Length: 360
Ligand SMILES: Nc1ncnc2c1ncn2[C@@H]1O[C@H](COP(=O)(O)OP(=O)(O)OP(=O)(O)O)[C@@H](O)[C@H]1O
Ligand SMILES: [Mg+2]
Image 1 (cartoon, helix red, strand yellow):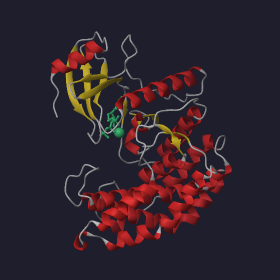
Image 2 (spheres, protein in one colour; image 1 turned 135 degrees about the vertical axis):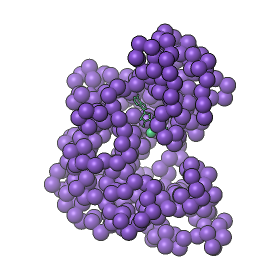
Image 3 (cartoon, helix red, strand yellow; image 1 turned 90 degrees about the vertical axis):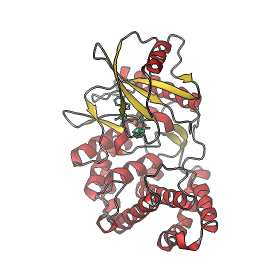
Image 4 (cartoon, helix red, strand yellow; image 1 turned 135 degrees about the horizontal axis):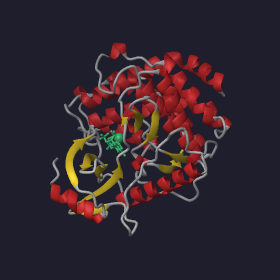
């Protein structure tokens, strides 16, 4: 996808940005949103994004505004501290923070300077600080009043994902199916029921959650390598329990391999990174997590690894309609990689629980 300078200028005018544009470059991986880096002649930089139509854009942008204002308030109270930054959507004087052009919607963020993203967490010190950042994010959002919009109502509806999986199996010819994965998914069904029973009976409360706490949604200071902000606020809602974020943070950062990796024998769940994430997270989390939330941290990691694997596998059976793939077997490979991550995790579950017990 390319973008014309006229369109960027139109968007700048809409947002009443007066600076002169010097250059526009494609940026990021283009997994969901199309991102561009704009540099102005005075060296000021902005992030421009064409927002994915998967989302209800008006709702997403309203949520982002709410979160932004809430974090500003926390910063003023000294609670969003530690050198943390805030993602800042640009608004015009009418308060509008996105603009529609033809069939697309666009937004601009202030570029957070001197930062970088990584797909992989290499060092324990970084993991500990990431845990602390996510814990602080949860803590700061725990008193957000009122309802956020839910831009993706089907997101993390695991019983529904399971139904989709069953449907997909029925509709797929035998030769395409992978029985090892299927048997495993089916064997886990009772745990889905258990987890959702906890939510339905309100034993585990719903909270404000980011819902995409993977490594490359965190900006790290390029000099110190400390995390300074979690970005990509499109999926934020307050209808899910915290385990979605804790589980996804561990799923994404504890794997010793990247998501795209086909040497399954090497896949390992890194307990040292898990320990650092938990050490950091619980520095904050101990103050607001309920006993039942603490008790289910390990289970939440299991849950997210399992859920995502099931979604990749179902999408593979369905003909790769949801996740963007570069080759037809990519979703199957991602599902299998998570299955092997789960196996490694399963073998370490007691150890992981002992690690958590050290910090709660
Ligand atoms: N405000 C910002 N300041 C600096 N860099 C940013 C900012 N917002 C986004 N980025 C960069 O742009 C990339 C993509 O942004 P974002 O995560 O919001 O979109 P996405 O749809 O998830 O992107 P991708 O498809 O690349 O994963 C980020 O990984 C980060 O490198
Ligand atoms: Mg992202």
